Image 1 (spheres, rainbow, N blue to C red):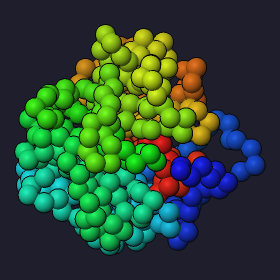
Image 2: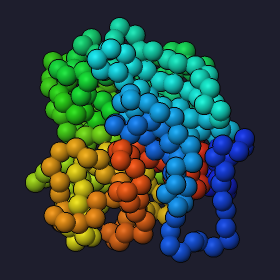
Image 3: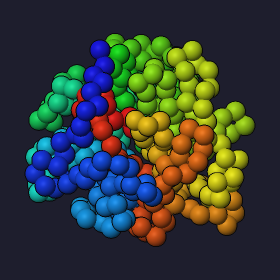
Image 4: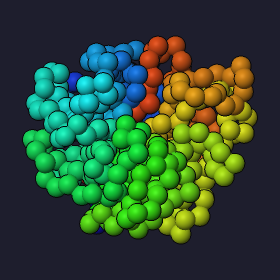
Length: 332
């Protein structure tokens, strides 16, 4: 059963690396401290409420997924396409490497979701199949579940994969794969049971699919199509119950390109990242923030300015909201 504790901020500040600030009333305007990484991000970093970088580790690797963890330190996935090496790195609060997991047989990986057993979930992509892989707190493999037969483009299959409190797995495909002789199309999110059996296909999904506390699934569609917007929320019956479209983006005076990371906050707002990749959508001369927070009725309450960094910030975790990321309490 899902843990729904919401009483306090999770303990990433224990050693002083990630200090938190708690106030009796909400600040006006809304401000956030954030942990960021992602494709072409320049490395994992933390920014304070004034958008100043307070912590950074330089890296030229492709870091599609990363998390600030309770007790201090971070974990992030890495992919080095030319070297055909990928995996996960766990750092302590002093940037010291605690361990490094290297995916076997030149598998690619772009995920490292924290799990209740203290380990992490990876989504490995290879010519011999697509795999949901769980590793333990020390970076050792616990189990490996095959969820597709092959990837036609192993580097553009999974990005962020997610385990759900119901012991199922969510993953989106950037490019096609095969499953029991059938094609799994790119641009869709999929759900598999604990044994790797495909149990559900979503109409959209390119970068991440997230199971929300109400049972709905929030997906990052990457780019808009005639059938769906950039961000879509589906109920358990598969009906679209909320979406963010290009028309919405234009109405907000924004200009964005590719939506990668998402985070649904306890207040119902959604944080959306904006990555410089592909065709721009929205207002031609509009503001192009690195990320923004939007209410359910599509009002902007917070933006990270484009001037914050010359790098992308496709993976983002707000550090000043309730929830333990190791207990399915941070929805990103």
